[in-house]
Length: 427
Image (cartoon, rainbow, N blue to C red):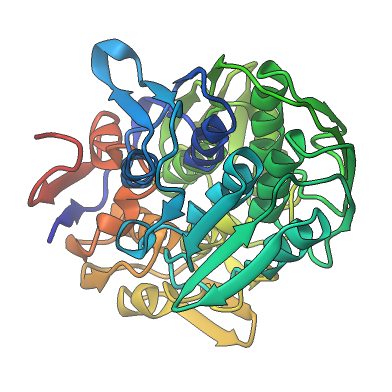
């Protein structure tokens, strides 16, 4: 099992290039199910979840070519025949996004069987909002033996009001609605850039969609969608993680190939902490030499607010900021599992319910720590970059799910980090 060994103390200096967004790439790969034509996706990140999605599509009968290096992170998918429309547990047990094939499968072939998804143990991500929406669109839903089955001769338009904002639910039903008969009106939708990216791809395939990126989306179903070439958005969470890496180490880091508009809440909060930044068209430079970080309160909320996927990384920063920071997690109920590991490294953090109180600045020291989920892993990497001595991070397969060769990118700007074990993606 792979580990990271990190020796802290180096300010990071240089440029880091941001990869494509995993959370955009996964629904866009699922959207290829909606057409028999070839779909080409560019800027696909080389991470484990993408490889899992490839295996999932291939198990259904699709042809998938993942290309990296000279192919410039390009993926070609063709779902001419979907002979086995099922997301099997042995494939999807490590990936929550597996539920995204539910809508496009039932819309395209009239039936879908999906194992209840796995992934990070950060709290419930109920699929009932997906299922309720599909039922309104005419699907019959049954659940047994850990799997969900949806059937429909053809979905029809419906008025769907989400009880709770859900990114995957919005994406799943958006895909289903593109081939449904009539008009679908979706309200209280997620507004994340990943939803907008998916909608842009679907429109390129011939879908009729209005309002993506707002709380209300209107879709007029069409008989057929065609192939498309689409470039995936840059990963805003990876970009935010590297911004904090530059800030926490007192470095000078240029985070390149990102979309600063997607990071407005993160930028504002880091500026509140005293971080100096220069924001360009597609890059953000962090200049933190000599900066005394100041604590700040933060609450996670749906986009365009501060993202839950940046909460753990911000907490690592707060341990190195003067004063007290109060961090409230409003999205997931079990997303403080990194706290105990940060405390083992010397952090002063107290958790009460959904609120963590961080008192800084505290010196961190090396320890053997355990990665529990994707973003928790990133927070431990950040803490290790400023800890005295050599920190060993176990179970880094979590971070491989969503960060493309993070150790190589950090090493390129001066971090002392190495991987023990097999390097994912290199055979």
